Image (cartoon, rainbow, N blue to C red; front, side):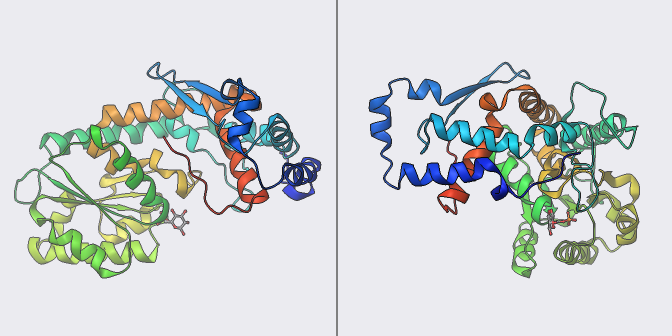
Length: 345
Ligand SMILES: O=P(O)(O)OC[C@H]1O[C@@H](O)[C@@H](O)[C@@H](O)[C@@H]1O
């Protein structure tokens, strides 16, 4: 496995630095377009989504780049061994060397069931089992077959989590709102400040509220504190601890802590330590999204990402949309010192 070089030790980095000074600070895009009528064609790529046959145009012609910039950025990626690391990632190798783990969220959206393994063991069956559980559970909740402790259908989902166990699901459920069930209220509570939970509970009825305790480790202080607040609130109404089973589920890798909290392991949706927190919306952590938009849509969401994974894996760097997007971020943050980078639809 290739190691990680310091980016600024690479030859292309030095070249990019001189190139950046030559370009100067006064780049006028209007002039670039005037000088080169083919600029849009040369600096745009189209992604063909094999899942739904749609096309997405990635137009990066309005960036502060020339042919030389693109050439040097791609050279930088090659010198940094991006291709080897990408291939190792897809092969389930432990490229997360600080934790000695694979980086394998791509296996969560492997909807064509390609062989994928970590430590010589297939992960495909485990991923599909959790998806099957998510399908069954989300269909029961959405249809009303899943009933609360007084026999009512759930109409409120409260996801309790922070970081990757919050931000991914928040962003995706917002972005996919048009597919959402408008009869289902969705709350995401992340903040340790009690107001966040208090506001969500104010808007919830214990008889019809389902809490998703989303935490990879199940030891995160904010999440366990908020989950305990929710449990106490719930028990204040429902009284019986046995009713928890109908109103609390866990999305986690830590069965021991989940059980200690009082959630039955059959109401636990698991995943593996090779899922990084920031990518976990594709795992069981995405259950809030799945409940909101329904399993079929959630599956399409996975299929679209799987198609993008294939593009990332098979496309030469010069044509590779996620690679180009990443390199532009390097260009702006490291050479222009930009602190934000807008990507707009
Ligand atoms: O999902 P848990 O384990 O509660 O962690 C929540 C978040 O914690 C942060 O410190 C980071 O590690 C994130 O990547 C993670 O998503």
